[in-house]
Length: 403
Image (tube, rainbow, N blue to C red):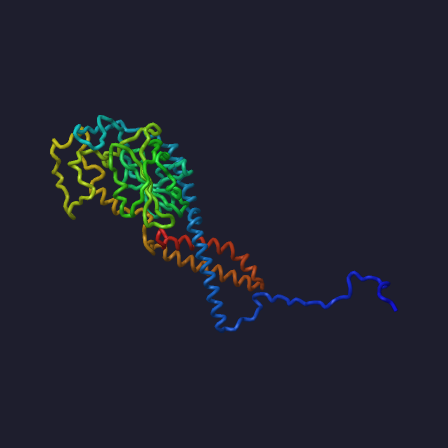
């Protein structure tokens, strides 16, 4: 009788039972599930998942996707800026204005000084490049456009057309987005007094450097308090953006003063908009308004003894007058707006939505024809993302800018 010790050892051993794994049925060959309550709940769940993914994608588009459009616009503006700088040989006009006031006036004024007058050329169309804005403290380098409408601010910071140009006497104001469209003013809250802001004018008027003096927060309706020129004898700059981040409830405003030692020759605004100085008694307070329909007769003038001006400079009300203040109180800075304000975007949104649905359905049937679900994703992925971008672009036009 053998104990088995002398039997040869089989390292493999006898074959055991083979486990047969069930063959996976392709997605398109699976039997349709019964249309019961489970099917309804499952359909609702899948729909909510898809909507949630699309909402996350749309948030990503707003934060980063809008920057693609703005980056393209900035490239175009850079080309326009370089072309203008290469072809412009503008020099300050020889015509000068002199503002002389009585010694008893306490308000800050230009006294016995001569400033060149900026050329009175044609107005710059909204959306055209105006200047290059540089803020080393926050690594900001953007091209500024004329105008602060919604379409202008999508391309970059915009200049308030109601204010003087940078490099001119008075308060020049520029607005920009803080979160979307590249967020040019995203770090504006980091500026502190003494930080430098440089503006290079595309017109060839020169390079002007400002020093930050203060940062304040105002309501959207309170631009009238920070945008009008307070002292027409000095050059100041105001930068405005939304506050707090991701909302447009308020406005963050940075104020700065021109640094003459670091700037080219400052100029007075053209004669048709130049803010000439008047005695405080002859200037309407900013909070006073004339009754509707009342205007000063054209032949009414202030007494000659109340104000002293040069013969060449007509007496006008300073830029802090009621009319200018009223205009600025009604300004639309491109941050405000409601749902479906851009009605022209409704039809494109519907068209791109249908195109998005067509791409999804088409990819589904391509995969079904090949009996492979992954083929649907391979075929439809890139077209779906491209159409989705344009769909989001039009949906974004229907939403409030600060949403």
